[in-house]
Length: 114
Length: 115
Image 1 (cartoon, rainbow over the protein chains, first blue to last red):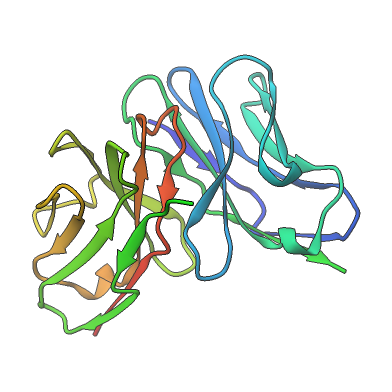
Image 2: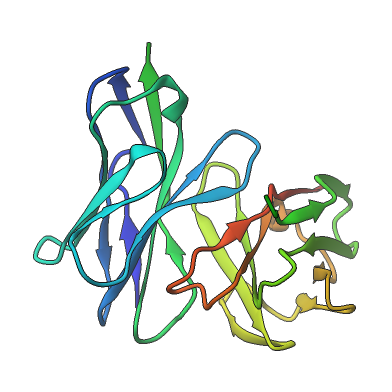
């Protein structure tokens, strides 16, 4: 079975400060990990993914995420937050056994204050 | 930029009625998905579709649900007899490659309200 936990319902950060949105996962095999963002009244948009290779992956809009196998985490980060980053962020996972469809977390609302 | 389009954007229906939600995936994509999001809750997988057949479905996708790709462009989700708990935002997604390594492109969603 595969699952994702996003422990924070909301993260508040001031514009210009670094941000972190947390994600931990549970899979049977090797994880494939993803971050998606959802703006109001829009569908989910792909940000970045980890399949294999470097633990630090870079994605759209200056976001990056670090895969940590020992902590089973895949936290989303950005060095300097923008007000326009305010949105709902979803972590997703699948593994190389069992279900092939993505399993999404419950989402974390990021609020960047000017 | 190519996008996934969904219709209707909002549908209100009476319990027990049939509903069809329509999606036009990106034209060269091969893998198609339906997900749903009940208000304030997580995005849940319903079904994936490849090569004109269901490749995977979740426990939510029971006999009341069906999907088809009738004309090579549209991808539809049918709910035969809606229940109150079917009220949700339904998202269609498509991918060029299998969604485990390729990114999914989502439509803006169809909000279904069952009264």
